[in-house]
Image (cartoon, rainbow, N blue to C red):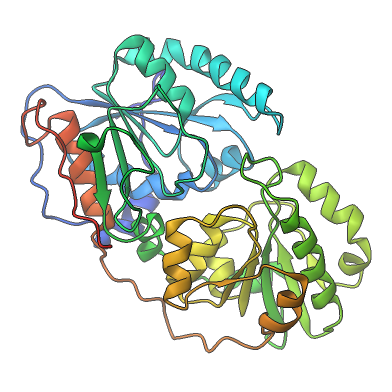
Amino acid sequence: MSVDATRILKVDTAAQKQGSSLLAPSIPPNTGEAKKVVWIDIDNSPHVPFFLPIIEELEKQGVQLVLTARNIYQVRELLEFFHLPCKVIGRHYGKNKLLKVAGTFLRALELAPTAARSRPDLAISHGSRAQVLICKALGIPSLMMNDYEHSTRVGFLEPEWVLMPDIIPDGVMSRNTDRLLRYPGLKEDVYVPRFTPDPSILTDLGISADDLLVTLRPPATEANYHNPESEILFAETLRLLAAKPHVRAVALPRNARQSQKLRTDWSDLIAGGQMLVPVTPVNGLNLIWFSDLMVSGGGTMNREAAVLGVPVYSIFRGTIGAVDRYLVSQGRLILIETIDDVRTKIKLVRWNRPAKPDNRNLPALQCIVSNILSAVGVGARKSDAPVTQTPAN
């Protein structure tokens, strides 16, 4: 499959080999003559590894893929890291809500030529409002995935289908319950089982075996749901770490602005070797696996740590979603809500790491791909609705 002006996707061969043993065989190959076209829009950095196995499965079914992405946070760098050809369209428009709305409409217009030229049978994303907007204008069916019910909703511009984890209750993602679809487990269950640890990351970062390693993820200060209390808790966490000379922290900023702020505000900690801010992208899953604990103001890396079994503390102070409440109830995530919590709940101790991750073939990927294929009419009549999963709660 060649890469043309719309950047029809060809997944890197090495990436295919890495995940081949985990690709579920239960979906029969597409034997139809005409290839279906699916347009995937990557709207944020966590969606790059999330969509990789989905892309591979759809390619196995003979689906023709068009891939676009928004230049936000480290999306462009992650696309290069994972060798994922993609047409990058649009950018982030900052924290101001009016600029965010204007930016959504502007990016929808920027996506229009690709959408009109490729005329996909289905457009899918994990929260791309610009894609839903242009799909409505051009009459393209859309399927939006989401796993945080308190993010800004698209309102009257709802997609044809909303696909979400089965632990999220009814009535919070979409008014149209007939087109509300579910998959078992978490979004992170789609790609974390593919992960293979590589200990060379410790040498690359200059981390010794004697160091207690902490991975840090600053709060998403430009997100709609950001609460400034998270920044206070993040600063208090760094002060806690600074008082422990045997601790090494690796901070993964979300963008260049946040990276510069870390380097300015915590220059003494960096100069003393207690905190490192990588200048190039690192494999986040690999770093988390070799860490003794994780402290994060964001959702995805918290859940990645929880899936891997790494002790994880959330300093997120927005409204807690159903997924995080579920992880808290299982003891896989600890909420840090006050400065006192930072001092009393965060345990700076070594994690008893197993020999390897639990690489089970979880059903989340299979269910998501089956719903996409059903929606696009592969293996079923195109008029058939995708398979709705019964909620676990």
